[in-house]
Length: 197
DNA sequence: CCCTGCGGGAACT
DNA sequence: AGTTCCCGCAGGG
Image (tube, rainbow, N blue to C red; front, side, top):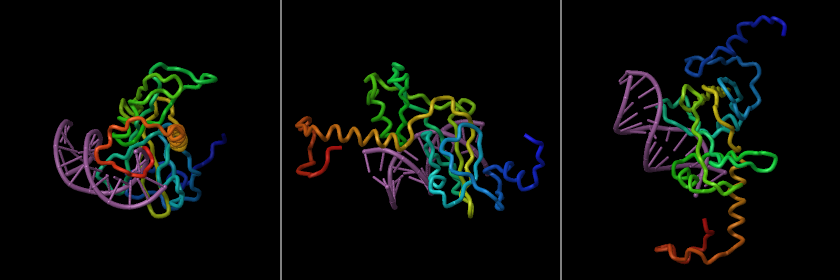
């Protein structure tokens, strides 16, 4: 590394904070979208970047209200692991993506490890002074500013796509066996010609 | 079903 | 008054 001199614009690129009233507008090059910032990081993306728009992250992040419509805040939910710490082939561990909404999360807790069928366990994120990592995003004119605070202290869960794939997989599995199980619980649901689950 | 953003309200400082 | 968490709602996939 040569001691390069930073011109004022470069400094501007590095020194902004999501809370600044004025964010840099003369950005030369935006970052390619990076899915999973691990630690204290800041990125500037084009406002056209769909991934950046959704703040897509391999980490399971849940929206949290900071009563600031300009800045979106999200916090990390951690990762779901097998409580037996089992290993799949080649020593791979089970790192499931925590469900985002509470209802789905409770349902998820009752499920079992896809590998060894043991109980699952949720490891909360404590990477930001003992609290979950937070991500902040601000859409400003031509750019999207994303900033993460904290360093995840747990393994990374499956990506959203992997988690989705897992769910639809299961659906296929159960659909193949058109079973006459639980016929009892259907008080009002009559001849609803819909798919089970 | 589930994800995502929004915003009211409560609790705490 | 500022911040953070909890919860339900609406839009969309």
